[in-house]
Length: 105
Image (cartoon, rainbow, N blue to C red):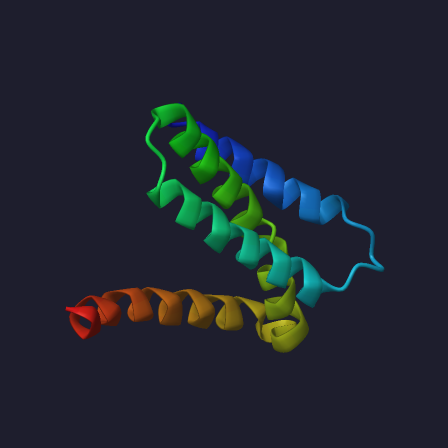
């Protein structure tokens, strides 16, 4: 069952790629992250492994709906410096995860 989150996440990224162009990217990202947070909340209150893994898989699917949009934003912003923008985005995300450990404790 441990493969479910990664499997569902792959399907989420593919679904966004298949989404019609007329769907606003902000709306897809908003609802993807909203559903992710709701499924993670449900995950915290489950009692069975199957339900927990399905919640994690669904959260991964919804979260990965935003991945192609994030990388597309790097292309829109960076132009010929897309790699620099993407690297900065990843560095700052990892830095935030590193710093939050001490801010929360």
